[in-house]
Length: 349
Image: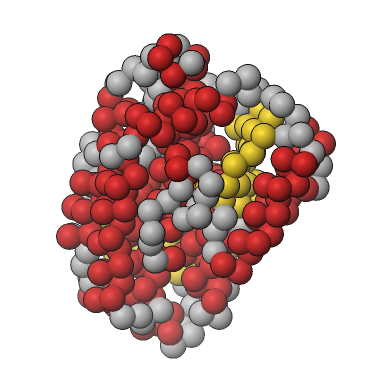
């Protein structure tokens, strides 16, 4: 099969391979804005009742690690899609709420509408890849990634956003910023190490996806970022149905779908629940299903992450999923990441 596999090396693939550079540029540009320091101080003094995390698509999923970090600080953190916020939860936008809004373009229709509705009611920390965007201009403090331009599916902007949100978590928790910066710098090296074998990974993954008709991604905790964003990019890149959910939720019903045509990618994740995630893969195999583990100790090299600190794990976890998008496209004989209907910036609700 490998000799017959035709990988179309389009612009989306080029963006994937450019991710180490985007991570390095973003890391080199990490700053400590005075306005953000002020908001962090107010949060520490208990001036905000809650922190609202909002975004759409991969920008929303990327906030899972930050949500957990804030919860561990004793902060009430709510994740709400921006579309739901502007239509059904507008009352959350008040002076007792610190809003963290994430949008790669800063111009999605929901973010523009939120800016119109908010009008200074809630202080906003904006995270975007566009310094002159509506989100950046309407933020109390703006953090701008340096991922560069992107062809279609979010990849460079997604990993850069994860990096910036980890930096934000460190600032809000009064962490050691120099240590944080050093750990984040390793993300570029880890991504480069993994992607240097990209063709080998794609061929290996394609061999395991032949005949698959149902695809699930599962994980827990911070890995829910890769679970949510990963299932989304597979649908965008390949027109292939993929569903993301927690590892526990998979046992509550979807386990009935296990068989030779179903593949489940499970993220090992943090030590706390790693045994549970590994156990799910074993049970999938015993039930006659097809599944693999993603992590440092994954049996297959294509799903094995470079050695890393836990801080950058969410960044590295998305890389094997991206290789899956290339493998699925090669199996289907199409170019991955080439939009037929979608647009880079969503401008209609």
